Image 1 (cartoon, helix red, strand yellow):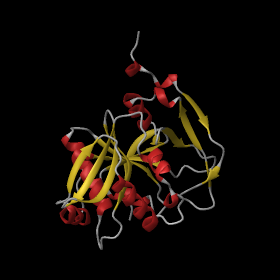
Image 2 (tube, rainbow, N blue to C red):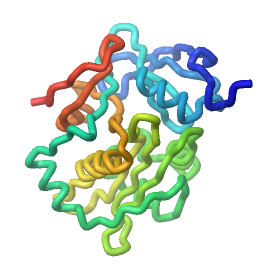
Image 3 (tube, rainbow, N blue to C red):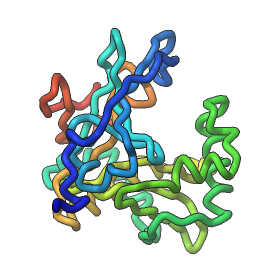
Image 4 (cartoon, rainbow, N blue to C red):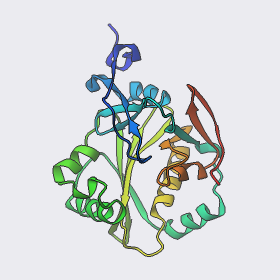
Amino acid sequence: MSSLNDIPITALNFYLTAPYPCSYLPHLQARSQVATPTFLINTQLYSELVRHGFRRSSTYIYRPRCDTCSACVQMRVLAKSFIPNRSQRRAWAQHVMLDATLHPLQDKSEYYDLYQRYQRARHPDGGMDNDDRDAYQTFLLQSHVDTLLVEFRDEGVLRMISVIDLLSDGLSSVYTFFDPDIPRARFGVYNVLWQIELCRKLELKYVYLGYWIENSRKMSYKTQYQPAEGLQNGLWTKLAASS
C-alpha cells in the first residue's frame, strides 16, 4: 500500500471558479483553478503544485485561469545565485539587527494588533482592513503543509510577522505584515532578503514570491530580486528586472 506521501497529482480534482473582479488589474474579471480535496494536499504534493503555478491562501489551493488574461506569472528567485543590488544592501544593513525567531503556526494578541495596523495603513478599503480575529486566523493560521511563522523583534518589540511554507525545493512566501509607523523602514525588502538567506542555509534552491504582474504597481517589484524565473506557457524561464 502506498503512503500518503506518495499521493499523485492525478488523485486531485480541479475546478474553475465563476468570474470575479480582479484584485490587481482594474476593470478585468479573474477566474481561478482550484485543487481539491485539500486534506490530501501534503507538503510533497503542494511542492509539485507550486511548480505548476499554484499558491495557497489558508487551505485554499489555486492558480489563476482567467478567460482573456495571463498577466499573473508565478515567479521564484534562485537563492544560491542571488546578488542584492545597492538598494537591497542598504535595506539589509538597516534592519539586520532585528531578532528573528522561527515558530510553528501560533497566535498572540500582539500579532492581530500588528495585522490590523498594517492593513489599515497599507491596504485601506482593501477588504482585509476590516478582518475580525476569526477571519485573520482563518487566512493566516490554517495550513495542511509544513509552515513556519517568523517573528521579527527590535529589542523585544514586535515589528514584523512572516508566514512561510517549506517546500521540497525551496520556500514559499505566504504573507508578511509589519509595523507601518516606522519612518523610512524597509521591512518588506528586508523580509525577502531574509527568506533568501534562510533558503541558502537550508540548502534549498528557490524562494517562491507568488505572482509577478508586470502592470500592477503592487506586484511588479518582485523581479528586482535577481536572478529570477517565471512560469510562462508551462515553462520556467528567466525574468529580467523591471525598469
